[in-house]
Length: 183
Image 1 (cartoon, rainbow, N blue to C red):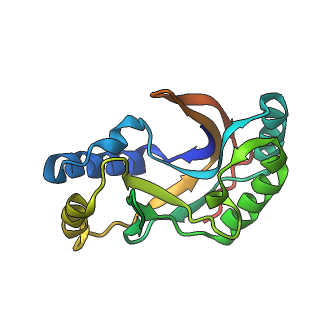
Image 2: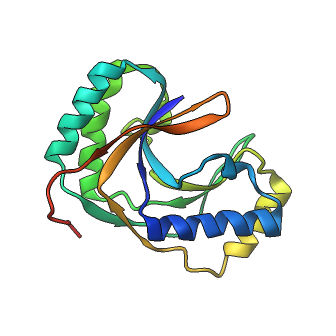
C-alpha cells in the first residue's frame, strides 16, 4: 500500500507519540507503533505509476503555500476493526488541495482507497489501530475523555509513504514552495 500523506511537525508528532505510548501502557494498545511517524493521508492505493506521480506531486507542491490546521476532539471509525483517531479540521485550503490531488492522481492509482475520495475523506491522525477491540477502546476513550486534544498542525509538504510486508517508509517528500504561512 502507498499513500500520499503529510507527516506532522515535530512538536505535534511528539505529542501524538506520547499518546501512543500512553495507550500502550494504560490500555495495551500498541498496534499503531508499527507506523513510525504520525501523519494524515490525502489518498492511498495499492500502488501508483511512480514517474508520472512524481511529476504531478512536484508541480502541486511548487504551487502550494504552507498553511495550518488543527486537531480537535476524538473520533472512532466503527466496524469490525475499529480505529481511534484525532480528527483534523478540514479547512478550505485542505479541501481545495485534496480535490486537486485526487483529480490529478486518481488515474495513476491502482486500486485506490475510496475512503479518501473527496465526498468521504475525513482527515485524521490515527491513535490506535490493528489491536483495537470493544474492551481496550473503552479504556482509551475513558483516558482521553477529559483531555484537550487540540493542537496546531503545519501543512508544508506531501510525502509518498509505503507499507509493504511489515516494511514502512517514505519514498519521497515534496516540500511546498513559498514562505507565506496561511493561518
